[in-house]
Length: 384
Image 1 (cartoon, rainbow, N blue to C red):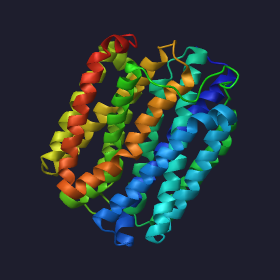
Image 2: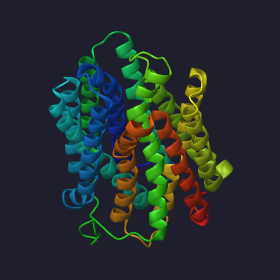
Image 3: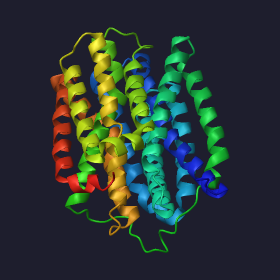
């Protein structure tokens, strides 16, 4: 089916909206080991940096619903994208520690704001035009992760300084945003009388927990995989981004075929199998297997995470009795709170019990997600 040209432009803008924050967060993941070395940071200071990142993300996600409601998706996405580019550039200058904390918080605020706003926009497009868009759009998020991680791996391995790596990549993203973001439409949330916040029911709480723990695992891959592989996998700083790249690449491959896998296997077996794969991969990291086993564990984690979140959003979209804005805002806040704020808590745990034990904690949280999925079996079956 050939879509009308304005709708195609809107979908292209949504694709870039999903790709953009994932790509700049990949830059952040690659910068963390360099920041630790350039600023001579201790483990508690790295945890403080990640905590500032998490605090900023919470502020951005809290502001996303009201800002989208009153200013529209176009302004919110554009302003957040511009802010994230400026902040990641400041971090690449390796400023003093206090300034790095402020930049990390501001960057996370913009990234969190953009990710929630674009999720609201993507689910709004799916409901408005009755199209299956959520899983393909999340594939673009994974593509952004892969693109950012591989560009960092190639540029840094070739000896390009981190500052120039960030400048080249963000310049390309900014050019694309200037071309495509003007096509973003503003849904009339204010005119429909939708609230920016609401108290969640039990089903929404379960969905939020599933998304939270899934993305908390993803956040651990962003913030701690490089340090883990450098410390326990005997990789150099330039190669340490390989773990995050494998997670992102495996997620991308599984999400590209997400709709086909859902039709072939069913949504419920797909999410249950994904949770089981995540638990297995995290257990392999906890056991500190030889390097090939660690890399295989990262692949299992990426494959497991791939379709859990898209199918959870699809399940929420089918609950038409609930308003769009607060439901998606709550799930997005839970998910991106996990990916951005969760690693700060895990970092505090790592300073007490060691980084490998953090992966065991994540495996137990994924087991909780598995129980929630079983409770929502009927809702997931409706997505098939």
